[in-house]
Each structure stands twice: as structure tokens, then as C-alpha cells.
Length: 391
Image 1: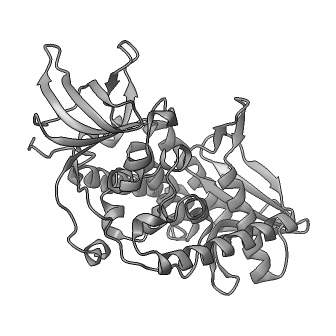
Image 2 (image 1 turned 90 degrees about the vertical axis):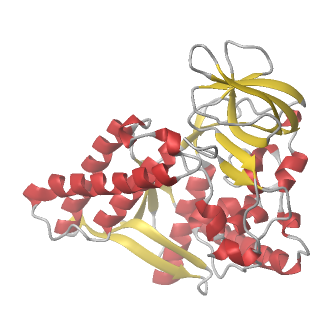
């Protein structure tokens, strides 16, 4: 591989983003909007979006989501029942090939290999084919459980400031029910170590309910979160709670647009913290993150460091070994030994940013490992102007 294979490029310079106000916000955007305005601004720029690490789980999630959309939009309605599985498999294979092609051309993800090697591939394939078959049956009959079945229901509510698309709306004598399908993990660990549904997903359901009420004049009685694995998660809709979430979303949208207009520099929109930065896709480009990150953030995984390569070599057992003098990141400054089986091609003296490193369980305190999810960034120039990020 070439010297830049499996590596991105970053530049230590002001963030190049054009000030673009948001006309509306969707339920899936709310969490980011309330977490960090700069992260939201990065998401408006195609250049930055296209130069982030996606990862195998997210790519398979994208395949599942797109396949569900095809079914829910009626693109397979013309298919005879006996051909449903065949058509679903064809769609799956086609979408997977698109993601594999994107991986092959990615500077950050070329090491991932074919999709069959990605974690969870077989399980997700089997599950999404079963769900697709079930949804095709509901679409063909137009009803389920004695009620009316509608899919891909679009909302533009609250004067067009809240947009969203409900996967499924069921209307029955007992009332309106909404369904939102999720392709990733729906649970997270609470402070007491119990498993809880991710709060942002519950908020999304409440926002869909509020948008339905604003457009149809009726409150849904219930909403369901439908993961690819496990059963449906039901919540009862509290109209006051749902309306409160809608109002908070509108306030956040207004605050973002005012901040965008007033900020003399885009860096000032950042809200760096251990919680807001940990899973941000734009850390490689974000100077406020590198300025604020410290070992006090206590990231036990997803470790980030910036520094100078002191040595780079291939071990006798085929591992690549690095020594890096860390200057910034979620670590104590100092020299770190970093190992992995990926081809690194880093030069001594090169300045790098390494994201999503993991502790080496068999090593010392300053020994880290590179995995398939590790992002390796070398310093280089990129967009010359904010206009370039919009192309």
C-alpha cells in the first residue's frame, strides 16, 4: 500500500466552515444540536461528512436502514410473495456492494476488507430479511391487527421547523401508534450499571408524536422502538411531555442559528467535554477538542492522542509497532507504545492524530492497541476555503 493508505489527513488551522443556518431540525439531529453547535455545523458540510470514519457497524446499519426504506416506500410492492425473499436478498447484496466499494476507496477504512468479515454481518442479514418479509406482508394487506398500516409517513410541522419521517403509523380503534426502526444498539448502561433505552431514542419517539399531532390534530396513544434484535419497546405518549420536547427542539434550533450568525470564529461554537466529544465523528478536525482533552476525561476506550512518531517498525510476529510522544489528547503526555496488525507506513518525526485506541490488556499503562476502529490521521493540508467544504 502507499504511504497514505488507511490514513486520513488533518491540518492544525482554523476550522473552515461556512455559516449556514438550519431551516429545520429532525428528531435524529436533536441530540447533536443540544450537545455541540460546532458538531452540528460540521454535519452541514459535505466535505467533512465525507472524510469521517464510518466503521463496519455503521455501514451495516446503513445497509439495513436503506433496505427498510426501500420496503417501506413501496419499491418492492410489485413483487409476488414467492419472490419476496429473492428480491430482498438482491437488494441486500447490492447495498452491501456499495458500502464495500466505499470502504475500498476510503483512506481511513481500506483495511476493513469484505463485508462478510464485518462484526454482526450474518445476524443482521438474517434479521433484516425477516423484518423486510414481514413489512411487505403488512404493506400488501394495508392493515395489521385490525388497523390501518401506513409506512414512510412524512411530517413538516411547527411551521416547517421540525421535519421527520415516521417508519410506520398504525391507526386502529384504540388510537394511533407510531413505530421507529433502529439498526444499532438501543440500550446503554446507566450510572447504576443497569441497561436503559437510550434517552435520545425515547425523545425521538416523543418528537414524532408531537409532529403527528401538529399535522393531524390527534395525539398518538403509543409509540414503539423496534430494534433489529430483541422485541419492540413500547412507550405511552404523554402529550405534555411530547409538546415539551418539541418546544425545546425549537428553542435549540433558534439558539443555533443566532450563534452561527454572531460567532466571529467557528471554533467558538464548540462545547468540548468528555461526554460530548467521546463519540463525535469530527474530532480529527476539531482544534477545540485537542485543546481541551485531557487524561481527566478518563476514557477507558476510544482513547485519543496527538503527537510525534518516535519509531515505526514491523515486529517478528508481523505486528506494526509505534512509539509516539503524546502532546495532547485524552492521555497523560509522554511516550506510548502502540501496536496493531494494520499496515501503518508512518515515518519517524511525523505528526499524527490517533483516535479510538484501546488499552493493551497484556501490556503496561502506556501501551495501547490499534484495532479496526482506530483512526490514523497524518498532518497535511486540506480545504483551502469554507466554500470547498460545501462541494
